[in-house]
Length: 252
Image (cartoon, rainbow, N blue to C red; front, side):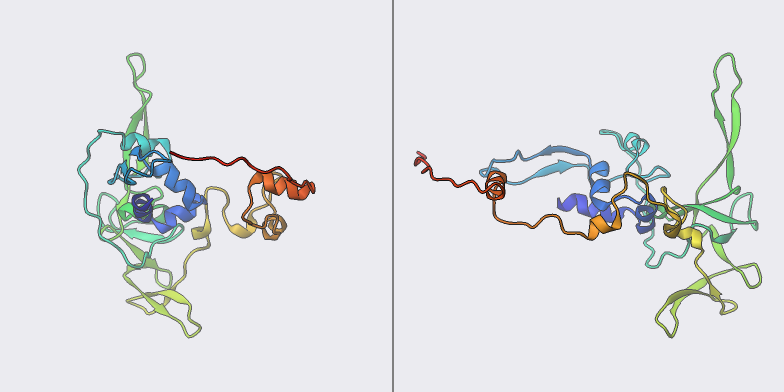
């Protein structure tokens, strides 16, 4: 489906990496198809009516909260998101806040929402949120971190002097792409925690579980495609010969 593939490209690269989910699943979970040309109708043009515009927020596209935000008939005021060619903020980076009540403070990037150019900094830019409030209970107030815009509200911290700086992407002699501080010219390494997903902190630390498909099974070829039906394949396996002649059929 062409439209669904276009929608999938709006999901940020690092959001998909963090989910550790295949693209095919994200397509199915995110798509909202209202009508599709029935199968087996060659006299109909192939058409699909589905939702084209989605409102992205802190809810991941494959969650129920995302579907609640984008329910059929629900209208939103869509905001233009500035495209970023080279994403420069990763989970575990130390950044300096440039706006809000916590201006000038430094913190660690906790979450990335690349679809909206947002990051959440741990413990900073918080808002009080009331939960469990009713007639008999005043409720509990919790501090909830709010997203910050990477283009204007945060900047990376140079680890050499712990000061905020803008960065440039450059290539080393061996072809490795690195972040360079514009002020000091030093490399700002990408933290190891950027490899973190929902399933594990780092790929090398993940331990195979009993229901996981082993690497040997993935590399082993267990099926060879051929132009046979299921019945023909079974007959070949069991050495069954078909001597009957099929009766002719006619279409009017």
